Amino acid sequence: MAERWRHPNNAYCNIYQQRRMMRRRGFTLIELMVTTALLGGILIVLGIILSGSYQQTAFLTGRGAMTGSVTNALETITSYALLGADMPATYTYSSTTYTRSPSTLIMAIPSLDAQGATIPSSSDTVIFNYVSATGECTLFIYPANGSNRSQTQRVIVNGLSNATFTYGLTQGQKQVTVTLTGKQDSHGNTITFPITQTTYLLNQAL
Figure 1 (tube, rainbow, N blue to C red):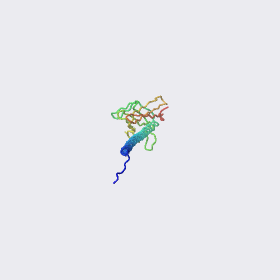
Figure 2 (cartoon, one colour):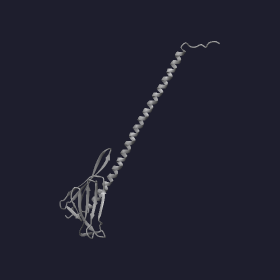
Figure 3 (tube, rainbow, N blue to C red):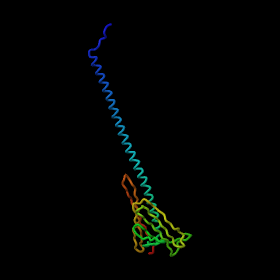
Figure 4 (cartoon, rainbow, N blue to C red):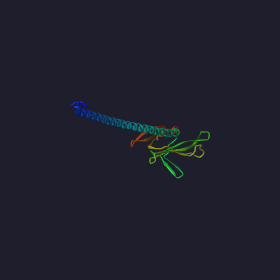
């Protein structure tokens, strides 16, 4: 049987082909690693973006809710201030004495009968008191004898950063400026936003 002829460089060709195949396998592995790394990076970036978007949405939602609460409280105070006839320096009920201050607003407003008409020479007392330790502003109503109003104690807003009452006490020009400062926590920081309203007492003596 005749011996099969072999190319003299056949061994070299086989080695060359094996190296080429190894190179191909190497490039494929590198490409896979690069692709995996890129995909991982993209997923990380997307996670950061989505996390930031969620935090921003949560912040805006909380900010909107707090702004609404502060605005409603300010409207409540304003509605009573418009009825105001005077802002006494003090008021005592039972054993509790309230004193007019930047954190305590005392107002005398006309008493009402059962038909909703004002009772001459009779005043109910309305107090708004802010406590910094709790961040709450509370409404107190102490009706005079014969008044149709009910005695009230109600928190009108909580979570405040501050609340201040500034007074104009000139006779015939009495007014109160109310500033309620809401707060919202964001990424470890506290953001505050004040809302202010000035109201003249419409029932004051001129």
